[in-house]
Amino acid sequence: MTLRFIGAALLIFAAVSLPAVAKTTRHPVSTPIAIAVSINGAPLNVEPPPRFVGGRLLVPVRRILDALGLPFDRRGKTITTQAGDRTITLTADSELRGVLYAPLRFFSAGLGASAEYDSRSKTVEIISSLLGHSSVVSVAGGGREYMGVVQAVDNDSRPPAITVTSGASVKTLRISPGAHVLVNDAAANTTVPGSLESVHVGDYAKISVRKDGSVDRVIDSFASSHGRIAAINGNTILLNDGQVIVPTGVTALSLNGEGARTTDLQVGDAVDVRYNLETSEIREIIASRKAPTGMVAAGSVEIESIEPSLSRPLRQGDSFSITMHATPGGQARFDVGAYFTGLAMTESSPGVYTGRYTIPRGANFASAPIFGHLNVHGTEAPRAQSLNEISASSLPPGVNDIAPEQGQTVNNPQPSIYATFTAGAVPVSPSSVVLIVNGHDVTASTTRTARFVEYHPLSAYGDGPVRVTVRVGDQAGNATSKSWTFTIRTH
Image 1 (cartoon, rainbow, N blue to C red):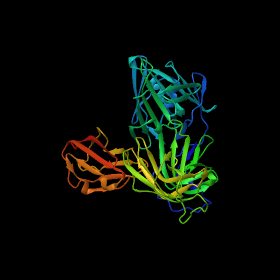
Image 2: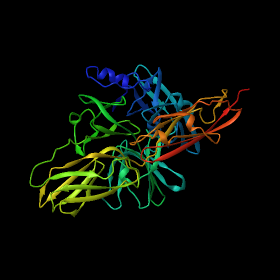
Image 3: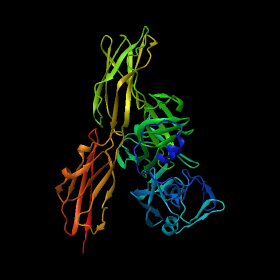
Image 4: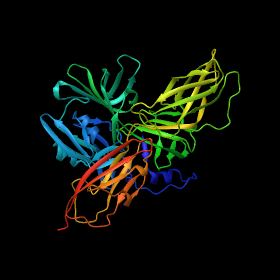
């Protein structure tokens, strides 16, 4: 996968006329040096590879721990792993596109490994005695945890199954009734209950199996982004937020629910991009485009129109109806973009077909049109597309950076207090943001946007703890909160 930000985009699209893009702060672009990795003398395929950023060599953490057979439990930038009877807690300080990186001393100081960089061969060499299974970890209670990239999801069999791969290891697991599914979007920093329909090929999955062999829990992890196409140059796509997207051979690309190529896309198309959390490979690009107005196919079997009853952003449990006007006496069905397809409709009166849909757990999509299908006595009508689109999210916004940080001590009695937000498919609603400091609602004195809230106290606080709570919701009504405490000490 190739993923760079606006600095690189300006070079790539120098010959393309682009709309103005607001200046944003991005991670520094790494020096383009191909760096290999070997573990105990054996080459390890690491994608994305180690990279130099700001003169520092950074190595992706999870891929190395997986190769050593060590569990990976992440909380922010703190990582906990288990080696025999030892619990090891480490901190990695760099994150690029949802992938956590650390300098070589992370592995030498934290794991007691020999970690060196050979500049002649451009190879990171790690030698460690902490070796285990490459994709299976024993857990408390006699159970096991399987980890790897999702290769297949079979929702049609009973019970359904998930196949994960890690290196040469391939494991298919039957998902027990009652197994818990959690969906983790690392880009939005959110984890919510989901369903197997939320698990996509290319995601990274951790599947916990009880001692009796039944599956207890599935944690599905990925990173996603949403935007509109600002420019296209060959196989390279520039989004309106400055991201440069280059599909690869493993990327599934669709436009309005049908298979597509990059050349089929246009400026202004809405896109959902889904990345593998560990490799940052682009695994899925789902594009949608509004239907042109006044376009009705002529013929003996036709669909005049199809529209949803709602066009506002929706959340889990929200329902909407769909009405389609078409040739009477047929069998009708509808799709919600490329996400949910083949949904039944009934003919409520001659030529009027209706259906209803409820947003399920784990749904997270933007600007999805409704597609209508009709078959009358074996004759298929041309597919119809709604003018209005549906956006939905069951993921609340994430609260990412905060300042002052949890546990921090500052010597300024009037510190600037802020928090930044990351939304899923549905944007943050600035009017939903509430900031409470030491039990007082100071929201009226803040600056609120869809990306951050900032507060500059008008009077000084006394020395001691300062307790902060921020609440934020998106336009669909999903809400979350975060609380933290810092300390003021002026003398």
